[in-house]
Figure 1 (tube, rainbow, N blue to C red):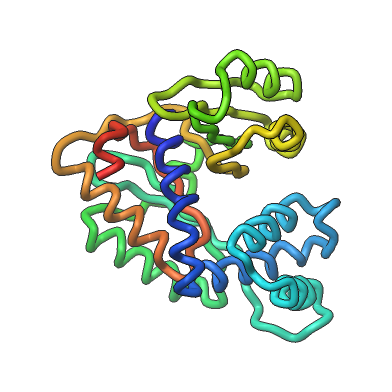
Figure 2: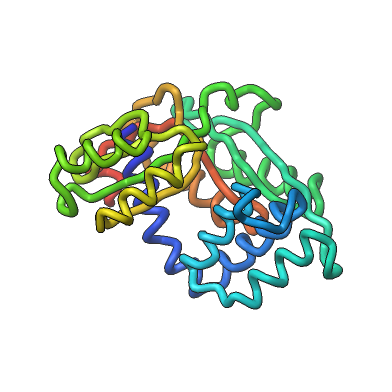
Length: 245
């Protein structure tokens, strides 16, 4: 999971820059709108709860969040968005799974296909790579923030499935249903969290070396920058020092 942990942390720090450009606001509003279709109460709608937390992390005004929820529930008129998932491969045989929200599925599919092609990858059919990932709660904690034994006790007692010690971080994995319980336990124990999300984690990884490192990361970043793309998951394993670069 080394590549996944490092990438999760990098993305979390990158979010502040995205928010300044307004890009993150646009994406989060779309996600809140679609999530709110299944109910406007975050306590009973986990997807909406995650989207609202993401909005708050980006310092989105409460009025914007409220309007997006009302558009999703139909209380306010708005653009009709739908979920979209696309699958493919990056250079080096890395599996890539893309989640998006779009008001024009055909346009988004065409534009994402172009990104794959330009960056040396290729799109694949539905189901080609989705089986390689599993939904999990995923929490990254800096090794400087807490003693390993103390953290292990907190997360396992609160329902975590596993904790992995990495070069700079501890990576905690949970079932999606236990994610908030474990996150709250860390907050209650004043343990600072680098990043925390319900995400798709690869069941196995592909080691990426040489020129393919930049090619894979360029593709992933280009996909993430597309306005209709919400999340990009990939099963690359890239050494930490290369990811930092």
